[in-house]
Amino acid sequence: MRPMRLDMAGFTVFRDETTVDFTDADFFALVGPTGSGKSTVLDAICFALYGTVPRWGGTRGLGNALAPSATEARVRLVFESAGDRYVATRVVRRDGRGNVKTANAGLQLMPAGFDVTKLDTGLSPEDLGEVVAGTPAEMDRAVLEAVGLPYEQFTSCVVLPQGQFADFLHARPATRQQILVNLLGLGVYEEVQRRATERAGQAEAKLEAVDRMLGGLADVDDAALAEAQADIGRAHELAETVAAAVPERDRARAAARDAHAALAALDAELAVLDAVRAPAGVAEVARVVADARAEQAEAAGAVTLAEAREEKLRGELAGAGDE
Image 1 (tube, one colour):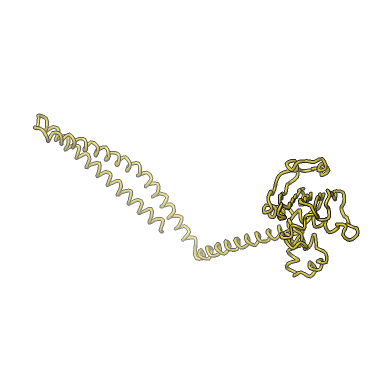
Image 2: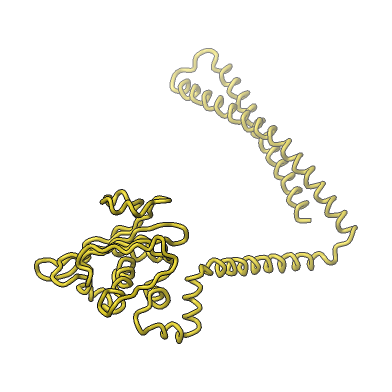
């Protein structure tokens, strides 16, 4: 994270609007007498990003942000991180009851190549770029993603409170290692290692499964292989025979349905005729009905024969598959 510009107004000792421009400075030093605001510049950077300062004792010390007799404090930080340029803004106000609360907090992703000197022209917030966060809670997540460090690590290795540099030097090795991983962006390599280990485990499991399969085929010889291939050939032949019998079965079923429908129609006619005196020609109708019944029985027999044949073929096919 590289600071580019810091604007303050009503913030602790900086009651009036004050701008610190870091744009052309690769290295810089804050010098001045005690009480001139050197530490406050670092406090403002930390406050713009995280909404608090180590020596305030957490967010409950928010009242420390206000200059004496001031009712509002504004801090705006333009910074670069991972090739992107952001602007973080914090505004706190004191209400009529003396309570100090955050009135505005936001993080915006500035357009590529944005000239920070344009901030002197009074640009509106909408002109500063895409809104990444608009509330303190959203700021916590967005700043962590943009800077790559949580508040505790930022104040342990980037902006160290006075007299606390030794805390980082004497921190537990695991703590220092995690801080350096975050600072140097080494987390991506940890993720690569994790995924590589996971894929290696999956490959080993597949290899063991293949070894077990090969072990089960140790006794297979050429004769057994030839027999298996012959079984496969017979199974294919049976499958083709079954497929060829299916149309015949379907035709038999269709004929049976037609015969059944014709028989139902004749039965209906007989029911009507039974209710009246038998006229001439009843014997002929009865003969037609008998013929229809015979055709229906013949069609049903054909269906039964076709289904039996199909069942037999399927049984032979299943037997061939088991072999």
